[in-house]
Length: 518
Image 1 (tube, one colour):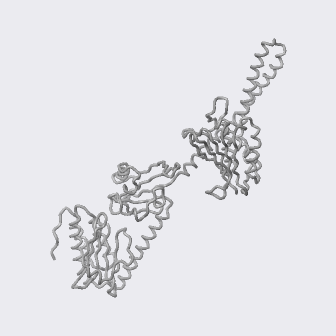
Image 2 (tube, helix red, strand yellow):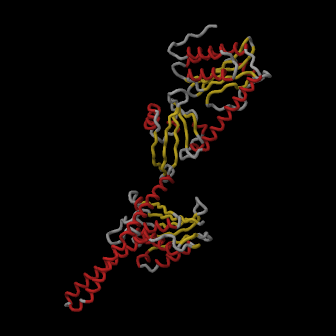
Image 3 (cartoon, helix red, strand yellow):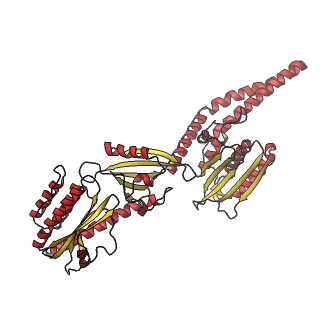
């Protein structure tokens, strides 16, 4: 039997030698057949390699070994007679071509060797090597009587491999993260269900086998290629966080690229995992804000008496001086009255600030009982309608009926809602529309969602993360202490709720309060 000439630099010669060595040991177990397939696939970088043997009744072929990630086709392979009638087959596929070589000995069909050879420098040599291996396999299989035990072992091994492959695929599809795998040719070899339903959803069928740059075409090709090449070259895990507004709202993602070694030490694939961490980021932000509020509470508890005492002294002196103004001339008395009024006003302002700070340090919990949030909203609006600057607003009520009760402290909730409405009034400069809406949270049936929507100037992106921080305010000097929203945040947190804010410059803001019903 003539052996085709080979490029001596190609590993084909080593593959033939390894196959011969495996077969020389005899087909005593299924591992030997698997060894032949593994030698071909590993040594020639084949994408798929299968060995089929004729069934006992001689009518069909059955796989005794399999290696590769291509799915089986229904009704495949065809009956023995049909396949043998066509003889050797060659069929083009993306990035290579399928070769099927019947294993025939003395006109007797024994099986089929099927491989996918990738295009490249050595594809012709790889074809010659596969032909040689097929010629070696045919007489060896014909001379070896596969025992029933071996057939059972091969069938069992095949079933186990198929079951493991199905189980692994189900695990990957069940992951709550987007996952895909590319090879060194940047072609997609795995694409899970989460990737199909993401913001750039692409079906498994449309993604498999294509270059990743063609599928993720919204991302710059050069940047994406550099990221993959860095993993291929260094073997180091790469992780970045990014923000995307593809869905219309800001979402945060953690992208992790993991090197994969399929055979040996060389990196053959890169696994990419995309995880939506928006809620985690929001939870971290709320935790940070809560820690800030707790720190202010500790500060207030430590200094409140030290501040109140001198304030009380100043106020007492002011009152004593006011009693002595009767002895002054009218001109001097007018000046004294003005200064005393300023002192009294500023002392009272300082006392209000201290009282606000005390709200952080006082024991929380209060007398909570089942409360109708719509009733709390109505009572808050009733109190505010007498506010001179509030009368210029148009108030729209959109309160859903039949809402479940929440466990809450009515007075504290009124204080919180009032802070939000007064904040809206200031944002609109007492002119505009305030919409107050209540309903069941569309995303969670165990929560009530209250929305306070204004048509004010809006909040800048830079200020948005700071609005619940103590003493932060954008109001002019003397118009606010910067504690209203901080106290509001603390009250809602006491009720196991949370506040989110959506704002657009020139359009307005929407403060969303979520309160649990349980």
